[in-house]
Image: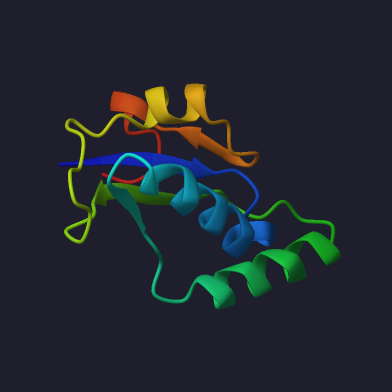
Length: 99
């Protein structure tokens, strides 16, 4: 089971993912990171420098198989309401980006 999270400012993608991972780890979850997170961040910074808005990035929270007792089900909205991560908002069931 997964839950989607929208990273609103990909120019700070790696830092936001690190904070989101830290918050999710307490619940036995982890962030499925984009394969080229640093490249996405660099392109977003270039877009910002050219006075363009970088597109938000969607990542998924998933159960961490290394966690001793992961909680179920994964709920991005509950996680981010208890532990706000600046730059990350839950996508919820709306599937705003992607599939």
